[in-house]
Length: 68
Image: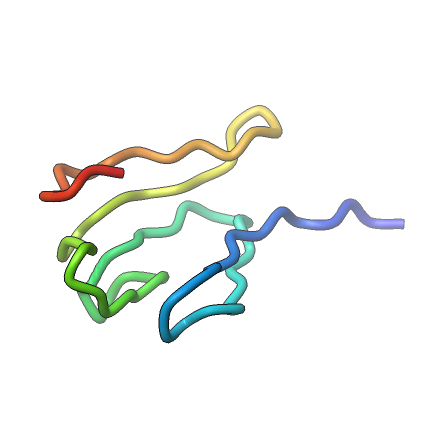
């Protein structure tokens, strides 16, 4: 049986319930080209990046105005 791929799940807002597999690094931001595009005043253009490393999910703030 294959190992399930961890997912990032949006828990509030207009994208609530959306799930994104962490099979590759994901960009999060209000930029339409972000894999996880969020339209919210608290989300910067290029807000954060999330990825898997050694079986753990890691997140990096990309200089967002409101923090991550």
